Image 1: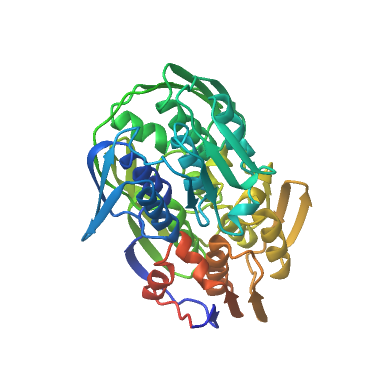
Image 2: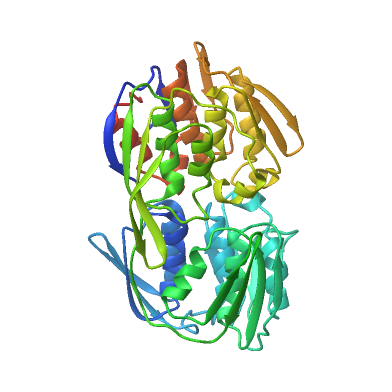
Length: 441
């Protein structure tokens, strides 16, 4: 089987509606919380990507059974002491930083040493931002110079902490929240704004968590050692997966698209705010409140008069996974687009800021870079007429999907490698994009 795809022509006009796969962030959190509940949880529309499947395999290794019936995963938990950690175990996280970091928070009371491992890409990502605060709870954690593998030995004498999360990382914040759930007393967290799926889920489960939201930081208090019952949850569509189809539609001629039932949590829709400021016309209709999360249908149509943007740094965290395709829109917009303080992009599955800058230069876009700031000089007439080969991008699923969108909207003849990278987050990507009429070999 080929490890690459070939795209030799632009996508033609389309007018469709689609569903995208379940939200990855919520899927992993549902799996982990279901494994800690008392009794049976039923999770519908769970994303069946490698990252989530590795999460399911890991909780099974920790003694939690699950079965799948049609579109429902049934997970039976035994409470906060339900993991079987009376022997040394190795847990494999694959490419999922979300699972690897969050599960550490749930292993703070493990009876024996648990080792968390990951693939080559995940093993190059910094884990000190999680291991450092978890050490304050009293657990013993060691790592390979702040990288995986991480070894954790829990304790029966957990102590609550005060934690200042300065980066804007939902993974770090959630790991500490999970550890606080198992810790007697009150843990206090001051966290730079980031995704709040964990907090919303805990409130839905009736756990004693208090949240005071300010402009830049959230102040969170968690009272530990309160059990909760199993729950039912229908995972909405993923805004990060939707972003590729939003940009595909914006940059295609005379096209329209409706993406049904997508999670539009305000901590995740920076891309919509940014693109609409660039003169896109993206509408959110049929909004519903589902267990604290807001879902909506996303209506998007071709944009003929895109303009540059001076992107506020305050939108960075709510668009952190979507900047690759935002840069693509900036490349086709009239004027200069400025983005600042994007060093966090280089700490993702690959050095995404570096890759994006090199990619844009290769397709003929003028870039001015200063450390973690970039200016993109847009060209509404940007077209590609030569051959393009995309490889050696660390098998990053988002780079692969961005490259497909570029090929289908800018022209040229493309060979894009590492197509299996999408299995980690969005296995249905190529199937859906072909249904819109894309010719991909």
